[in-house]
Image (cartoon, rainbow, N blue to C red; front, side):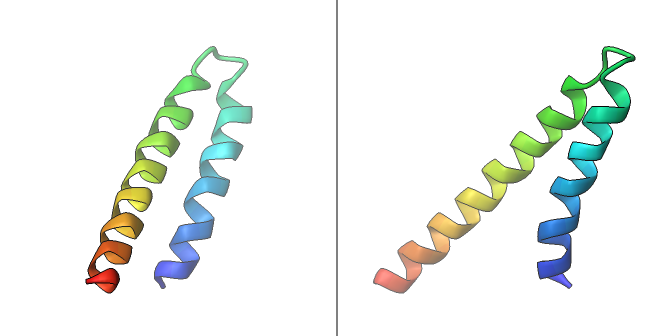
Length: 53
């Protein structure tokens, strides 16, 4: 389930960027995508740090 969400959420955000771009609201999905990718990066970093101990 996590793998599916890992790939589906960015695709949905990209589709929303294209749909909302004409309304000048395209930055909202990009902001959500950047927060999501930051959280994923932090999670991966912490997981790698635990494995190296």
